[in-house]
Image (cartoon, rainbow, N blue to C red):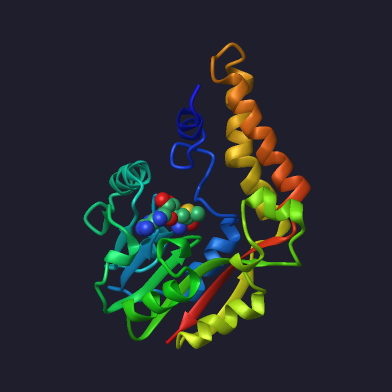
Length: 251
Ligand SMILES: C[S@@+](CC[C@H](N)C(=O)[O-])C[C@H]1O[C@@H](n2cnc3c(N)ncnc32)[C@H](O)[C@@H]1O
């Protein structure tokens, strides 16, 4: 049994219960699209787009707009291209299987990055700088990133495999955006139900459903162990401590 096989079984792009790979309800997503207000013909880029569901919602909100999804995971890119095809968006939404930091095209009307700040070597400050550089003057940025809702306990840090310095407070995140020359227009955070539904649909739920359906499989014990570890890490650790903020920013 290999960790690689278990990871593949639990992968997010292969999980049809995930609309996107972030704690985000339908209503909250719609509020983000409204706040980003892409205009007809807008050029939109999503860095670390996953399979680009949010990118496609933004493109669908603005007639004649186009989207570039920049994403290194081939499975996510494959799902994104299939979705774009199914929604007749293949000529408007393009996926680039390439690292975010290497996509230096500018002049976008809207640059998005949700849960992907680690795609830049310097993390959040680098991500904000790159997003600021990607948009034209007057353009907008939608940035989703982690923050500590409260001081992380040792169990929270262990559950995430994180260090205390990996995140700051919500106010510190806002200040980082401002330091990059971006002005906050709307700041919202994932609520507890969004988190619980996300964790239940993502690794924990996917692994649990698979294990129940495959009791005799040679990977069963490994998947159950991985699910148990994630469940302890969340419910006994980072639940209510790790936050996810969505910042709609103006230039
Ligand atoms: C937490 S997921 C979020 C995906 C998507 N933004 C969403 O909200 O559904 C982070 C994504 O960043 C991608 N990623 C990681 N490193 C990257 C890099 N260097 N360049 C581009 N994408 C990257 C991962 O493959 C993953 O799809």
